[in-house]
Amino acid sequence: MKKRKTVFVEGPISPSFIANSIEKHQTKTTIGAHDIFLGQVRADEIEGKVVQAIDYTAYQEMAENKFHEIREATFDKFDLTCMHIYHSLGKVKAGEICLFVFVSAPHRKVTFQALEYLVDTIKKEVPIFGKEIFEDETHTWKVNN
Amino acid sequence: MELKILYFGMIAEATNCNEEEISLQSGSTVEQLIHKLNNKYDKLKDLSFNIAIDKEISDHSTLLNASSEIALLPPFAGG
Image 1: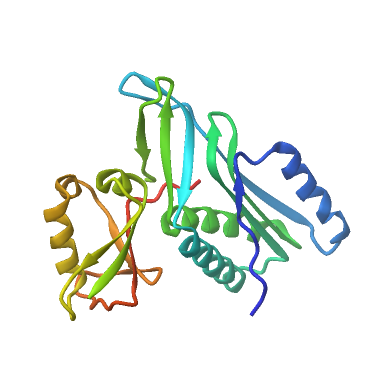
Image 2 (image 1 turned 90 degrees about the vertical axis):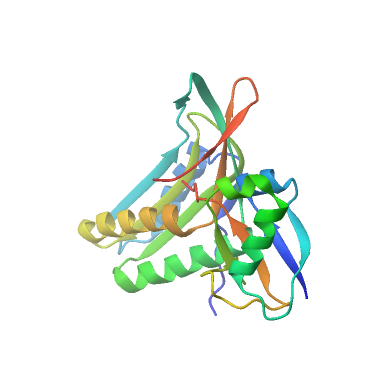
């Protein structure tokens, strides 16, 4: 079995991490198209209170299994050269990045399709939970649509 | 049989713990477990959740056994 890739990172995903990831692909010259999705924590207003941060937790072993399954299924479905998925655990403040999905292929069309499929499937199937924390330290629980 | 149950997110908040052991008759189903947990935790009735057995979402008729890892999963919020 192929070695599983690490998906979870502690805290927010920094813009420099994303830039480094892009730079690493400059040696892969069969690639002609990249597509990137960045999920950012929104300062939603809920019943008069504004979300300051989301504290992410996961059923980690199941989540890693799911990420692996989704990854394999996406490679089967779409002709991609490579694929990278990173998701935060712990606290991510409003405005910071919590999900980074990066797909690459020789030509653009398949990257658009694969990226949409990947992000939708991650949101639907991976057991990650988000506690939305307000300024006064109270909280509510985020639910994906 | 003794079953190890894991709780996550808002479910862990309702049960006030991340995991515990629950005792059920051998041959019990997911539905019987939910019934027992609803009796133990009042708040659970108002919450929506799925049950994963050995890290796969299962339906209510699934039979449990003592070696299963059972988890109550509230709605997902990744991304």
